[in-house]
Image (tube, rainbow, N blue to C red; front, side):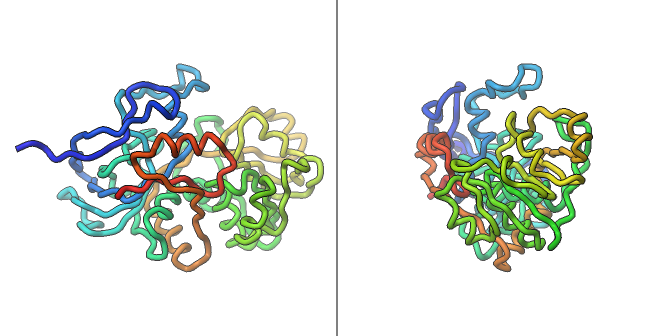
Length: 337
């Protein structure tokens, strides 16, 4: 008897969106501690296209090894189809969502009809969300949570020795979120508001109405003004864009403030000390317990997930092309019939 098969999006070589192919492959079997999830939706994240391109900007000595062909995807929402004998927290038929194995494995095969998942990486899908919106939450939501609320692990950042400590957020705190309309940014805005902070959102003008609707107290259109020129006295900057230009936000901070770039850039420790500020980041890690906390906030209406656009599994190349266009409001999601 032949093994059951499924459709999956695989890449056999690194390159542009056109290297993604839909193929027929065997349905995986759950290992001990895992469940098999029937995928209903898979969220797209920046690591997906970094890996698809072969991570060209990463020095070879720091570049993870990828065995081709591989199936992209870490964020998933779906239905438990089978469970390993040692798994007791989930049962067949449960609706679940999660970020799978990241960063231990940069890609876990979520662009497929079925995927195996460590039970510890999963949480019950929020009742208030459909599968596409649930699939848009895990990596972005956990990143915002681990930067602003609770790291939840003691693994050091791959970019610096200093340990990241989330800020204390309350009614006396001002938080500036750069890249506020994107996946991490729009959830960070809402988590900061949930904690009572005053939030300044930085994005392009087309996102102003959306960001004010989800709680931004002040909006800055970066196409018309530079926040580093006009904003002062901020307690916390969460730079969801990050990278080489992140240090431009240092002048916005008050003494004792903190800059948290999601994608770490180059900083001068002496300059930071002179300004009296700290700069720290962390590596987002899979955490089913924290996802369950985020799920409770969603069900209570405290936060919501925005979906920029959806594509069918077979249209994964078009979804990656949409990501390359930028100016994303929320998340891009693949749906699986």
